[in-house]
Image (cartoon, rainbow, N blue to C red; front, side, top):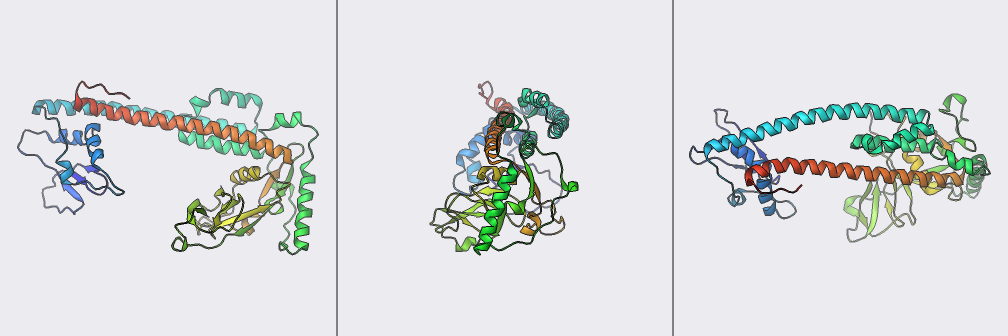
Length: 398
């Protein structure tokens, strides 16, 4: 039996190959005195909660090590040789049954994921009240795996940006200003900023053609390109070595907070977009005072005409990497982002969409928490099987 010191006591069962083997200094070798031991019994004991609990009590520090001194303090129950064999036999039988259950579970999850995927696709295609009600009636049974909950989040965003979550709101607010008027004000505001030389004029993009329109818009909405409602610019470079570690101002890169500094380069909550690498296209909202590095874009928009949290969900629900070259280093730019077509709702409906999305995302959070608790419960039950074997008769609470 080999136990790795630097990995917190992870163990591996080693069968003598019949020739000399060299171990490095990070390994501890365990072997038996005498012949009254059944080798598989030690292997079973090392996997038990009784061993793990004793080991964990001795692991301290940021990078805990586990060596022969720690092993010498471990208590091990020693039954007669024949009983050791019987214990191993019982454990192996139980574990085989568990493996069979896991295989059945994997198959069941696969079937459920296929059904959920089909149901969510049908929902985004049609989104009738009946389909939505049927799905809500089975939320907990359908969405009790992390993969399905992730798909549900994606579907919620798709329904939101298509206006399918706020159909009832539109029915009760028939006199809402058309989004075309909102877009006109944004264009006038941008023209004034260009005239005042506060921003540069961008290259005009072609009008949206009928072939580019993916679905029919709700009344009061309008199609536009991202360039018409946002302007992005790269943050300012700041390496980890140049960060002032005594500061408490968060530094944002492509995947959110990467460290802290004593200075900031944005002075209000700002939407940032990952610019390069694995996290390009990731969307984050900074704190009021923050530093945005050149691994992310700072997003500017007309705050009087675009509700910030709506824009946040809109960008998260939009594939900003749709023209990405899979063979190259992932990177996005204004040239790639600006032509993307989005559906823009009236300002008041933007607020209603955010309220609906926040509510549904809260439900997803609760479902994920239940899944995690269920997984932890299963792991505790597995450990209790071994713990019961080695501690005999002692009641195990799970």
